[in-house]
Image 1 (cartoon, rainbow, N blue to C red):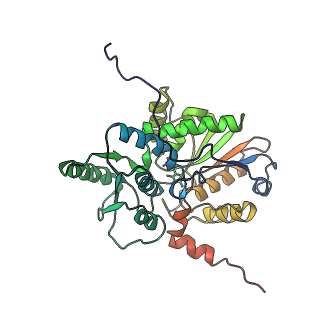
Image 2 (cartoon, rainbow, N blue to C red; image 1 turned 180 degrees about the vertical axis):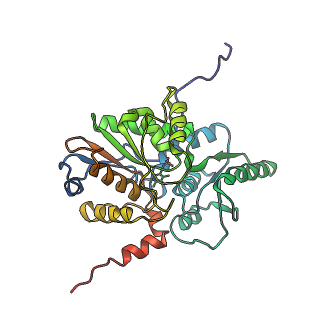
Image 3 (tube, protein in one colour; image 1 turned 120 degrees about the vertical axis):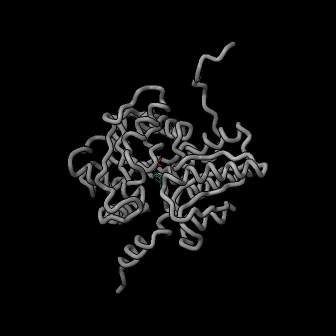
Length: 331
Ligand SMILES: *Cc1c(COP(=O)(O)O)cnc(C)c1O
């Protein structure tokens, strides 16, 4: 047989999480937002087992499988110092006995809490890249991989947030999982960071059923999601057909906005569920705005994807100060 170009054989995955992730009703929050009691559900991808939980687990099941198939013994990835993706890459490395090198901007000693603590616990090594732009991190990661190769290692480089067509397969599978748990769900609401999560959900569920809330992590989120969704699904998925709200970015990525702080507080006080200041809190603020302006309607089933990020709350001084200041006293 001769090769005739790329084939879409069944992608391989390793098991890193416990599936399906729970799907829970959120009736008190639904009513607080003016929705019907049974209109709002949480898809708990924060509760999937590996290393503190979160959406990167599903992506890493496919990414680590590809890396192992290619003979890798080391994972190299990039991100912000509070990256949940970096933390879960470190945990996945520990699970499979792989070395992990994380490439972060900044200098040692800047941050010690939240995800950094967990990176240390999982035994990852950090390369502090100094004062560099996000776009330079990929190049630095490639240089590090070359050096590791010279030293006899077999590194696999994972892009920001694990958002490659391989990683996005994890969220195609997640969309299918939701369809079997809750057939007929109208809208999935999800935080949009590096784009792979939304892209996979769009590939599985269709553009009209996914609302992405941009977190300000990347430039041109619509183009990134459309190209990832197209590569992942093998169909053309246009940027114009996507539903993306960009009104929750505020002063920028990882900055706690008032709307996000309110959304985190409301979710905690109605459902006992904790959201984070960078991703899920913003996504909930976007969901609330979408209810307010009629994009999400009473009587339709809305699924909020809880993509994790709890350690990030404990690594976010602004959020800690804000919430600690609301501690009520008795009497
Ligand atoms: C990375 C991340 C997201 C965004 O997912 P992307 O695939 O990068 O868009 C959402 N929530 C949390 C908690 C994350 O860590």
